[in-house]
Length: 279
Image 1: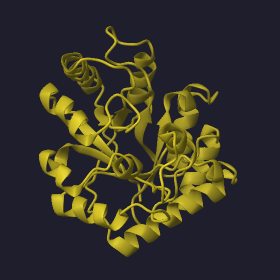
Image 2: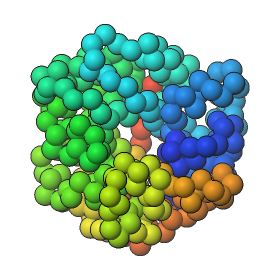
Image 3: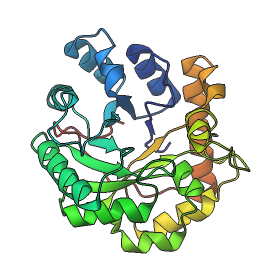
Image 4: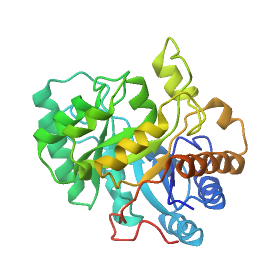
């Protein structure tokens, strides 16, 4: 069984306790969370920690969409870093939807990385073809210019396919600066509104029209050893009970990796120094 994280958005309507149980039951060894999943859970930190330990899970990634280049640190950061200091997670996943100059993005990303580093957290910049940072080249340009060891880029298969990225694009990005890989797939033809497609109509890994095998091979040849998660925003998946949705996501990813070959994922640790997998 591969070490896989269940993204926050694969089980986006499940409460935190249900999400933990469903992910562990399906075979996942880690989970992702949105900040609001944590804040709205109604659970004390000790209760969340006990649930994670009971089900042998760690938190790979935390997500929250805000304009991190707007100026002063947003109030939400206190909650993010509190979670890092109490429960532990590996990385903060950030896109950018607001238009900023390159200089503003570079300076702000560097400062965000510095604040995150104080709590043992990495920062992965994610390109989204319907955002203001649309391509791998754009986000890597910011990350490279910021020049922080804790900063990297995230490769999401849906965003890769819909941004028309090519294997050659990986050459500019050192393998160890790819923070994580998010597995999913795309419809045969793009919908008129990519935002709607991305948030409601993704497909399970290996079940769509994306060149999944080619991308996995390119990542292997490039030497990428980043953690893997399954991120499938899907109304169809939402309609299933969380346990069934988690099992479908894990089974699709497991079959995809068995078919096309696994990536040699390197061990990782959380912000508390915990091993990323308890298996």
